[in-house]
Image 1 (tube, rainbow, N blue to C red):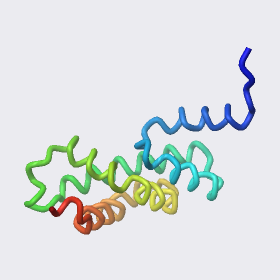
Image 2 (cartoon, rainbow, N blue to C red):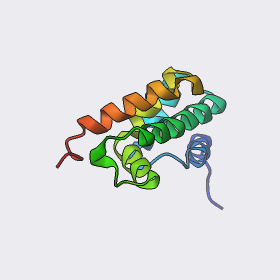
Image 3 (cartoon, rainbow, N blue to C red):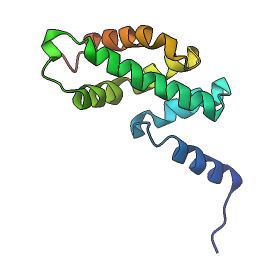
Length: 118
């Protein structure tokens, strides 16, 4: 019979709740959640805000990125910048009224990403 440590079980449950977070951003996201004492409702609202903001940013993407369809743009933005976007979305309390602001932030992050401008 395996021994289950309460903390490990809780961490496993949190990881299950954060299925939408790219794995390499998971430590940062968990740290943000713990540091801010965010409840699951806020976490889900912030994640939804990030999704909406990325979609808005895609609609406003520059000519150099026009060939990317929404899925490619979304995957790129979230792969490189999910932690930063989630942090900002938490700060904005996941309020969808700030989707345009977070979209502009997304556009700036992508424009400044040297790995994408090669």
